[in-house]
Image 1 (spheres, one colour):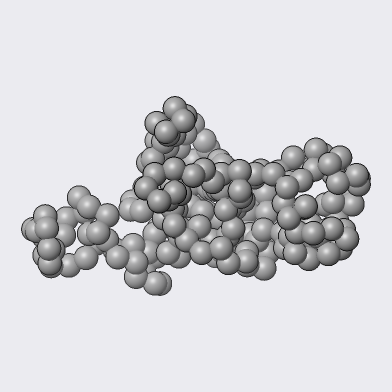
Image 2 (cartoon, rainbow, N blue to C red):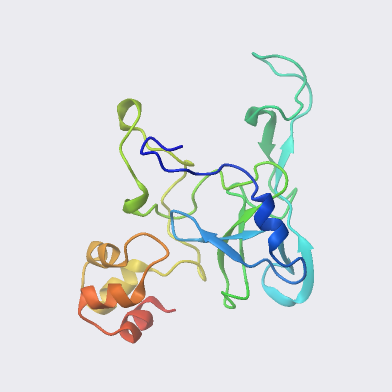
Length: 207
């Protein structure tokens, strides 16, 4: 439970995994706080080729070898988060447990978080900027909950460039962000708030 009493889940959604189709590409199952889509681990063999077949995507976190240098001691066996380390290129995904790929919903490509059967299961850091609606002060020194990560710009083919979109619309980036709200955005509502048509907003966002 969150401090507010809201239920949330940490782990692989086994029931959901069993309900969705086991053939073809994983469907879109959710959105992260930074606006990027979340998929299960069945994706295209080649990230940017929708015609190359499918495979189960693997994380690039590996179990360390040897014994723990400090408490609780013992051999690295996967009981603790610290038992794993990110090894670039050892799997299909980056340190955020995601990759830039094409999907049925994003045929031009986007960054996606992937839910994997093995560690780290879910994203451990954010790729983009966390929407303000997801942030809530709480804990010691006002620390925020959720994965840690930078607020770097989304890669090409990923989230819309809000700075460029705001410039096209002749408004500030903050005004655009406030209108869009937390992901996934309601474009109809956002367009109404900005006093423009939905098609004009989509054109500015490039979607």
